[in-house]
Image 1 (cartoon, helix red, strand yellow):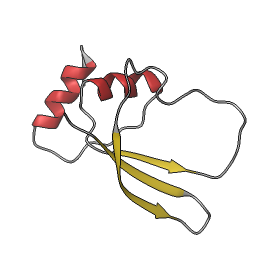
Image 2 (spheres, one colour):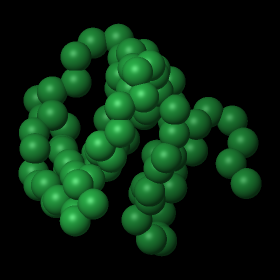
Image 3 (cartoon, rainbow, N blue to C red):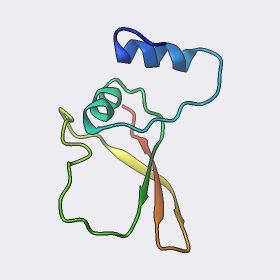
Image 4 (tube, one colour):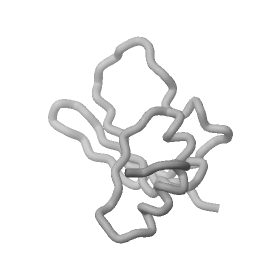
Length: 89
């Protein structure tokens, strides 16, 4: 069980032995981990369905997050998987 600061908990998990981490989360946690530079690859699956409203995925970021596209995959049903990595200073 992880208790305490989520950034430090994720940092500890990343430095330890074990499988790669996958994360599904809300916009606030995504912003927190992005700003702490703890996300190595962003993967978004876009499913072609317009719902009309929603919460911005990166609305909680304090500053722009430069990303570089590293791959795409298109599925027969029309969904597209995008993979990005953060641009590092």
